[in-house]
Length: 352
Ligand code: NDP
Ligand code: GDR
Image 1 (cartoon, rainbow, N blue to C red):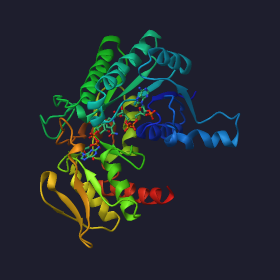
Image 2: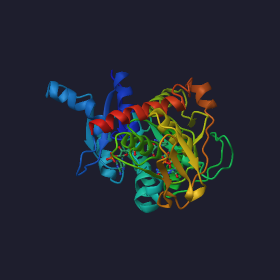
Image 3: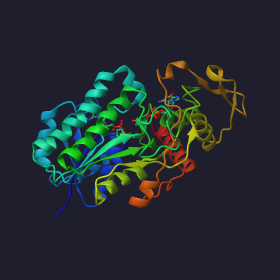
Image 4: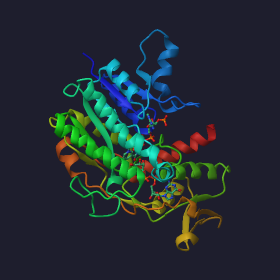
């Protein structure tokens, strides 16, 4: 019998990689998508249009259902219809800076949405059948309490997004303890890829590098260059989500590489992959990145990208995931990650 998985947020970066992984593992994969006035299925088109074109009557690889984390009835309907063995709750308003602009919506989707999902499983009497993965985040650690951060590090979120995700973390743990549900939190540190949303820092940089090389953009305007992040490759990280649900007992795990870099380092490396050496000068809002060969200023700071409260440093300790789940945190190194993204975007920009 095929296992059945339901992914919320299937159209996002992680959802698309996870759907591929679960299809490869022989799962029947279902996903919840939101109605949108423009296409929001770019990242998963290859998982269903190909099949559709080949044979309209053949069963598609992924089965999509309309729903929304702010709509309990849709969650109840889709869970009842699909009867999943595993639910991966990846849906979220996931942009930290945007969460300061839409705090209430972020709380509704990321915090209460998680509660709605857990309640739907419970109301349907599926609490012993269905395992649940909750996409928790290193943003829970926020203001530095301990370095590196691990499962026991106290939380101190610094944004409406982080606070909403803290509610989701605890309600997941609470349902595990109260109702015996197999519900777990993956506390994932930043993970990036060629499918990363275009306004997150890494993709913004790699796309800008590609556009500058193509002569379509002259400068890159950035926020806090000193921010330190533990960046991994999304394709490696979705495997942990699956591993956590295959583990004997429901437990929470930190997933990270154990290595951190500044935003400035990421930019320097990205330009280097495209054959451009950046020299940095100035400080704070006056800092600039110059093309060492031509003297052109390619990077400047624009305070509009600063956040009302910043998370300065995130560095994870993945020891538990390594020892308990047998996960390899450095399958894709920082340099390889930047290379994958820049090389992809050089081609992507040409085609666009
Ligand atoms: P994305 O922003 O790429 O994807 C978010 C997904 O959630 C999209 O499919 C989006 O749909 C969907 N979504 C947003 N709001 C709703 C809603 N109200 N109802 C239903 N679906 C909704 O995020 P990632 O793939 O990068 O991240 C996946 C999850 O992991 C998120 O919960 C994120 O907060 C968390 N996380 C991510 C990390 C990272 O570094 N990437 C690190 C730690 C945690 P649509 O396409 O229509 O917008
Ligand atoms: P983050 O990712 O906030 O860590 O959340 P993001 O890539 O947005 O920012 C990382 C760091 O870079 C700094 N920064 C900029 N960020 C953006 N977006 N744009 C800029 O121009 C810029 N300049 C500097 C930021 O200030 C920040 O310090 C991501 C999301 O995927 C969350 O959903 C997830 O939970 C966390 O990672 C772990």
